[in-house]
Length: 59
Image (cartoon, rainbow, N blue to C red; front, side, top):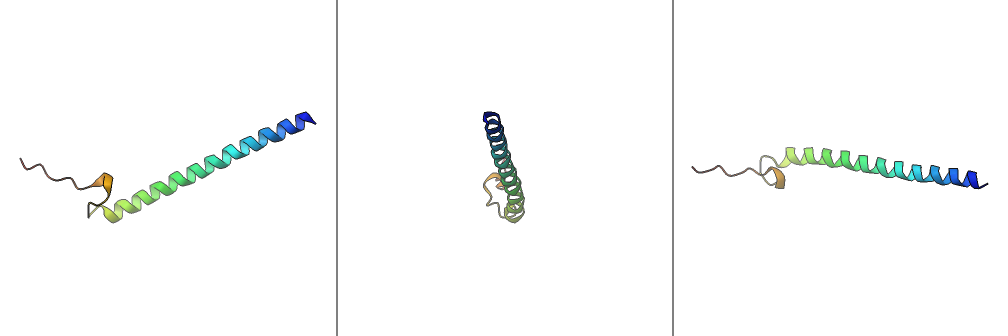
């Protein structure tokens, strides 16, 4: 009986870890899709924080 419970616990832990990993992967993919959409939308205006149009050096 104890061996069966240990196997079920291990399976449960592995399932929880894999579910969290799938959630993490989907969030990562969604973030990058959103980043590309935001870059396409805001690149001409320079309002996106990490790809702002830097001012030209006046020298």
